[in-house]
Length: 299
Ligand SMILES: Nc1ncnc2c1ncn2[C@@H]1O[C@H](COP(=O)(O)OP(=O)(O)OP(=O)(O)O)[C@@H](O)[C@H]1O
Image (cartoon, rainbow, N blue to C red; front, top):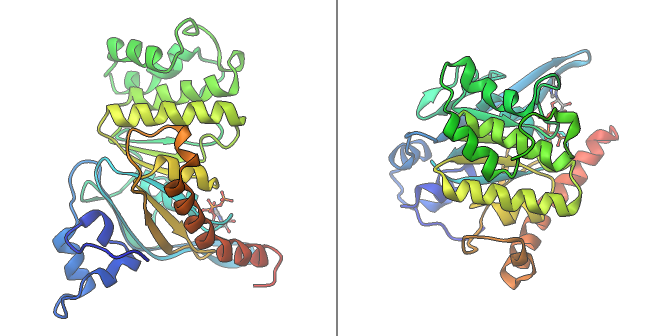
């Protein structure tokens, strides 16, 4: 683990960063409350456990997880299959309640979904019976807050001009995900929660979507939490990569990505990128093995 600056709230607040403080009088909790901010766009997961009831008994998906995300930070989450990544995201989105602990957004406990937290999944959630324009306008319309010039800008930004009246099935997979991003951004969310949004796309389209997302994020003041199985993608996009353990999920490692911004996909060949990629891959390797053993019923 790299050395931490205890005055740096962004790097020092997660569970495994508690060694950053050498102040014998400071308990971890006190240290956190000094350093964590709670302004617009912050996410604070505190000692969160999520247990599901299943036919074969209780299943602890996430166990005592702590994670603080600063406003406007781009955090990617890597973890083996079934380690609880989506569960964490759904608790932040307000779709699920933690069994224990809490999730704070902007300093307030999450008590349900909110348009200021936009969610994107691998499969887009566009309404198939609505045109792209109707889909993008839907959220703002529900709140009586349509800003047509903003919507026009989004169509331009996402390269969707000319497809305003098309239906989702008439668009390619990449364009559907761009429409999905436009739909999300039409609500002007403070926090974007993205669950493997590009994993169904071919390599070239995925690269273009990564660049598009980086442009969007660099232009606006938004916090992004992005789940992926792709180590290269995790590093290319993030300020920090959070590596989770096999189920029950906890934070195993947090990797600060000290690559310059703006980023582009050419960076993946640099020595520093490869070093970070190796570190993340090593960190996740044992967890992936453990997850496989769990799946095979050996653990
Ligand atoms: N509604 C549910 N009821 C019971 N068990 C669930 C439920 N949702 C998820 N689980 C279980 O909780 C664990 C964590 O699931 P989750 O989808 O959060 O993991 P994940 O890391 O996102 O997985 P993947 O990488 O495969 O998408 C898994 O074992 C999953 O089977």
